[in-house]
Image 1: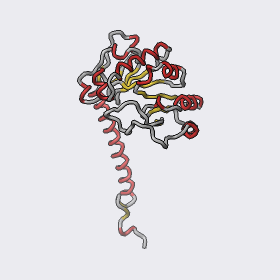
Image 2 (image 1 turned 30 degrees about the vertical axis):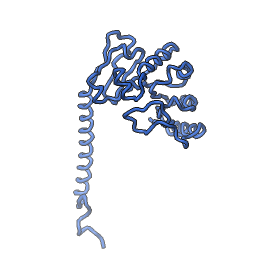
Image 3 (image 1 turned 90 degrees about the horizontal axis):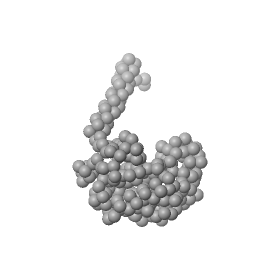
Image 4 (image 1 turned 45 degrees about the horizontal axis):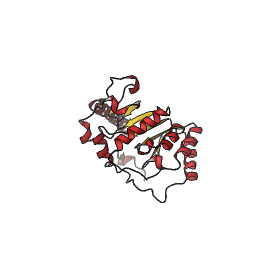
Length: 238
């Protein structure tokens, strides 16, 4: 799997941004260069590529890159802040694109979302964007959430907050078990403790594998008459 950061241009000012996004950089790749990258990824056997930014939908190349990857047998996803989806032209592009799914950044209640994203009204605008996509029959939507101290106590969210979003993921902490559209009473569940336990279990298993491998090396050195630091002095040939 691979992630392509198409541009650092962004129309949000997210508090948690780790890319220093805002203005597009003057040396960002052009279409021909990106197409070479897409072909290289396909040749290397990439199965899934996610388009990111900045805000990937601000890149003039994203539709062409998604099509090139899809034509090469690669599943293509993108993650957007959703600000431009209210624009009918943008909604048309998404609905007609080669994207396998579109992830939407949604960070809880409207006030929490807007505060984290640094742009008032962004939550309401995103909801209108979702409606635009549904009008066009595009339903492959996911929700990506940044869990913070400010919004954690207000999760899970009501179903009406995310009409049309079929899958939910949040840094491994939030999941929607079934399509929201088919579960009128469904609420999203926070699985923080469960995920932390699973992470600890995986870490412990990885540590055990490392210990066993280290033990195997130590035994092999010992049986050869040396130590992990090297052979005995009487084994060194001068």
